[in-house]
Length: 259
Length: 153
Image (cartoon, rainbow over all chains, first blue to last red; front, side, top):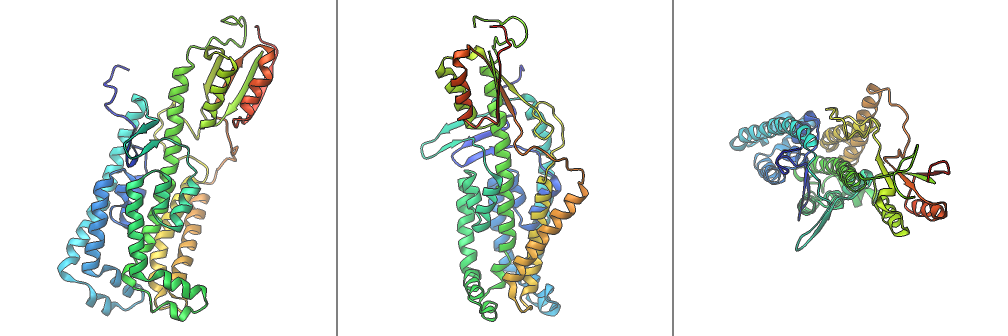
C-alpha cells in the first residue's frame, strides 16, 4: 500500500494506556452519554473532553439540584421537586446534557467510518512500548474479570485494562461518592439487619450519581477488554504473516527445501 | 513428516514458535495460517459490529440495569427496604430484562465452539524431532495437535 504509513493508524500506546478506534453502536454511545454526560466520550477514547464533561455534570447537577428532583419526582412529590430545582442553573444543565448526547452520537458515526478506512490501510500495530514511568503492551484480556473489577470498585476495571489515568480518576470519584452519600454506612446497617436505620443516613444527591457511574464503569471495562483482545489478535496476525511468509513447506508434492 | 497444531491468539503461541526455533526448526519449515471464522473476521471489511454469541445482549443488559437502578434507587427512598436494596434489585431486574429480550430477538444464536482455533501452525520436520515439537506445542496451550508421516521429505 503506497500510502503515508501513519495516516490512519488503528491504535496508539501511551503512558496512559491504549488509545484506539473501534466500531461502535452510535445509539449505545448516546445512551451512555445520557446515563452520565461524558461517558459516551470515554467510550470513544476522547478522554480529555470526557473528563471535562463529567466534571461539568457533577458541578451543575449539584448547583441545580437535579438528583434531588429526580428522587422526589419518582416518589411522586412533584411540588417539592419543582421547588428544589434551581432556575439559575437548570436550563444550561439541560442544554449541555443534550449536546453531550448528540455530540457523542455524531462522533461514534464518524469513528465507525474512520475505523473502516483504518482497517483497510493495515498500518502495523504497536505491541510493546517503554515510557519513563510505565510499560504499555497489548495483552489478551478477560472481559468478565474487567467487569467484575469495576463492579466491586469502579476504576479497577480500567486499571485492569491499563487505562491508568481514567482508572485513578474514577477511583477518586468513587471514594468521594462513597463518603458523601454515606452508602457504605448504609450497607453495613443493611448487612447487620437494621434496614430502617439504613435509609436516613443516605444523601440522595450523591447516591444518585452512583448507579450510572458503576454501570458506565462496568460497560467501559467490558467493551475495552474485548477491544484489546481484537487488537492483540490483529497485531499478532500482522507479525505472523510477516515473519512466516517465506515458508517452503509443501504439504502435497515435492518439498521446497532440504528436509 | 508433518505436524499440525491449532492455537488461539495468545502469547503462548509465540512462545511455542520460539521453542520450535530453539529445537532447530528453521522459520521456513513452518507454515503459519491465520484462520477466519465469521465471528472473528479480519480479512473482510464487513461493517457489522455484531459478534454473535451473547455480546450484544450483555451490552443491552448493562444499559437497562443502569437505567432501572436509577429509578429503583429513587423510589427506594419511600419504600421499606430503602434505596440500596431497591437500586440493586432494579439493576438485576434491568439486566435480566435487557439481556433476555435481546437474546430472544436475536434468536438464531448458533451454538459455537467455546475455543475456536484462530491460528494453525504446520511444521515440516524429521521424524526424530517429532516428539519434541509436539511437546513444545502441548506445553504452550495448543488446542489440538496432529501429525502425519505422509509428506515428501
